[in-house]
Image (cartoon, rainbow, N blue to C red; front, side):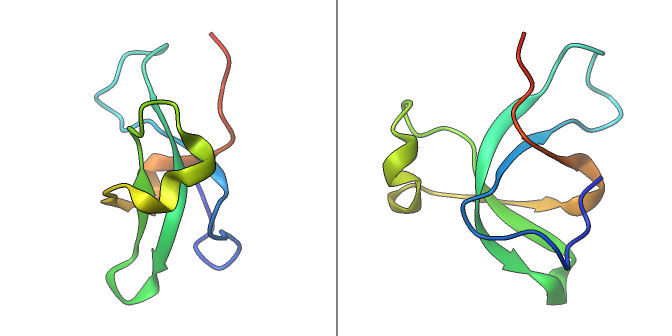
Length: 73
């Protein structure tokens, strides 16, 4: 789980809630930290255009389901 106090815009993260299978996750990049809501806005799908991730829609994601980095399959 991510500590909301240490996460930064542009950090690579992966989303893995409890109901996902062991090898299931979504990768993304942090677009905004919203401490007042206890979450992070993450861009998950940007057609592989990660250099321009700020131009894409983000999803408010609870920090308890986020982890640092992009795991490799």
